[in-house]
Figure 1 (tube, rainbow, N blue to C red):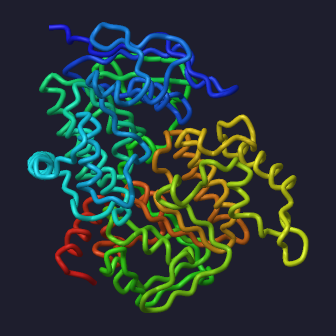
Figure 2 (figure 1 turned 60 degrees about the vertical axis):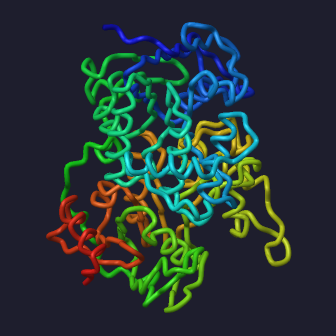
Figure 3 (figure 1 turned 30 degrees about the horizontal axis):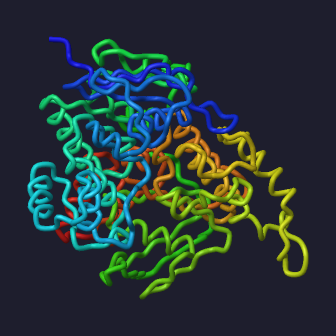
Length: 508
């Protein structure tokens, strides 16, 4: 039986100033299927799905829902048509509790004035039990890590029971076990007859769960096929025009030899018994001891929310230890876990965002005490970084908020590599990046440790393959504690066993 088509987008064109994000793109969404949407950063994936979700109006083309042409002027129009979306960038209110955020979503969907707390708690408990997407309802969103915030976003969408569920990069901040739980949930929704549209950059994830795939390239639809008719090399060719890709970036990493560690590198940072409290007063970082030397990559693996972010903040000099001691250098590059909150100012142009880190550098500062900024030099350097890191932008003067998520990440990486003379702290540096961009970042991290003089690198990542492939030494982090990984345990299985042991209190 041929699946029904609850949504069809035809000939969609969308411009942002002089940038043409979509050029006649097509998307056919079928009921009872999980539909994977792929493409490089800036290919138009998020723009196309934002049009389906009522976030943007197309400049040309038609949107059909249930066979009728619809003009979705706002998200509420899309919700009423049965379309729900989980966005790549969080849409939560940080100062409100999880329960209040979920209640606001239900009120908006129903058009009512009261917040249905009692009914909501019952529904959330049932949904969490069935999906494994558990979150602390009484915690404020600002107290949560990015993984927990992503779970709240997914729950908020599912509570509205959409017939068409669109998810833009939902796995970027989830642990592997959470990814599998989410995919089982999506598979179940499709089996119920709903349509699920999934954007992801890990190609193995899409191939594992999707019934059908669409590939966008430079704003055009270049491939639409059943999952059974495509393979990994074919998808890579459609996305990037080449068969070459970093196996870590595409999710096809199956282990490798340990990178050769440098010898004789001087220590650039050290922690001794460092403890840091989280927003609720608990020890998020509990007795961390670590030395980092020039030329080495120290990998820290773990499920998000176990203290990695606090460790990154201490190593980058953003947070002082509550207990213990920390010696960190002055020239530190910091790639944060959330580029939109900690990495960029969306309303600033690209030059101003680069200036946030480089304005005190000798080449860009003048006057008494270096208080004056040489904006011309910064604009030129920003233009050079855009070209070197292949950031898709019309120039240094455009607002950072107009860039796609992947291009924002490229800009942050480019800027922080400039700063990393002594130490680079990279927190999920390839999160949200496509195959080509992730491969580029991996190559830059390797190149960074070979330059003269070279910094030390601390790579904190929820992507275990990334940690295994790039790191000279590896630690696992569980409940705020660092545990070194012996050479004989350098594998997915070995690291997983250490994480399990640490979670049950068997450290050392």
